[in-house]
Image 1: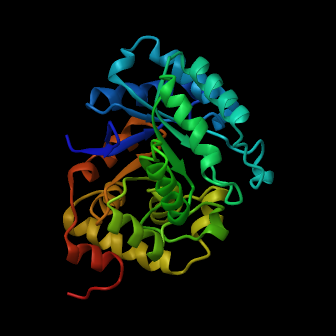
Image 2 (image 1 turned 60 degrees about the vertical axis):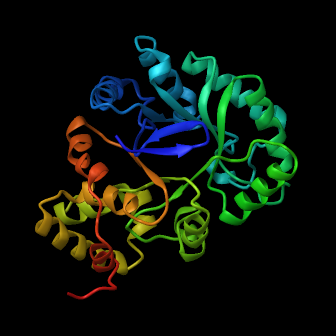
Length: 312
């Protein structure tokens, strides 16, 4: 199965976003999704210290007690603000990062995390202030590789140039909001893919883990008539181009007999940058409906059609 190389790690092209873990009444359903994902031969799980106030990692730790730790790749993140209302107050001091890391290790019941992300950037902080503690975590054997979540390409580039000059381990991979559906930082509060970001990732062949790949259900709910959750409404509804994109992806879905959720994954994996897609699922049916997108690669003409740049 094709992998995404990130430093010493090889990550699945479809990463299971386990952020739904954390609610007791949904635990059995989430465990069933984890079971099926691993049965299918995947092994990369994405969580964070901030998800469900730490319960997400605790539930995953409970699940992994019955699994071989060495056969699972764990991604987690630290340094997230204490509340979404204070996103500018990222917690990126060495003391705060270590507190988050130690809490994650305890909750997950593991001695190390394979890939550890800074969950948010603070652009007014020099990157070396964060690279030194992250490198110390690697030296202690508590982290294998480090990544930048919601960092601009310019900040990642500056950090990795500093790392190269000073004998430090650089960021091995990035994680940003990237989907066939269009959105912007003001709509999401996240770093989102745009032409500048895309050009940098492509030119540097820098590994990317894309989240919100299925646009929080925007396309499937649009066609089914179901109502989007508030975050999806704010992120995608204001841009009229998304409704035109919806019609084009439905047309391609019918032509290829491939479900739209699978096409959304394929779209990201078919582009000119090395990428993996995070999938978040409410049940095993949604997971399996998305699976064809992992192997399917769209042609240049199909991508141009989806993006509205190609007329047959």
